[in-house]
Length: 160
Image (cartoon, rainbow, N blue to C red; front, side):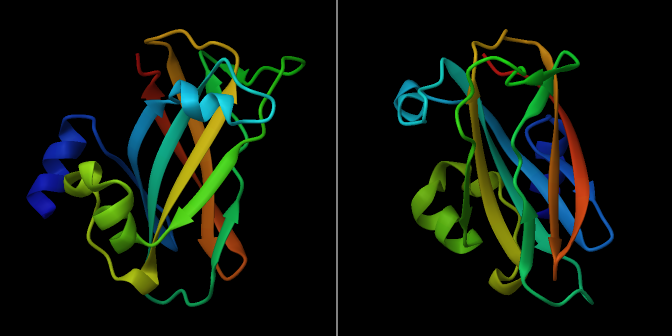
């Protein structure tokens, strides 16, 4: 599994950030499908879905702690842009084994192995105005344990 994770990392399909308390994998960045955008309030014209996997490092007990991801940057500008219509972001947490087996089995090979008590899948959907394909973007994801979070920053290309 380590060789597969390294290959996916080299291919740019998985990005990994190491923190003091956690390791966070950005497993997928995808455009929101129209059905998901229309379900947002208000409906979004476009948007991005991030799939993160957070794994606790040993020595850091406690409950998972998340600061909601509400925006990201596209070509150095906030998305959704201030003053533009924005949909309320959606964040859903999943058990890693359940996510792998029943929610998104198509991502099975991209997901790291980790004990259920020390891991969580976090799916964040952010809708807004139409996005330019192939633009450069950045997202900050804040995650931790026992009320202490760390910031993990990921750069990516807006998918087509």
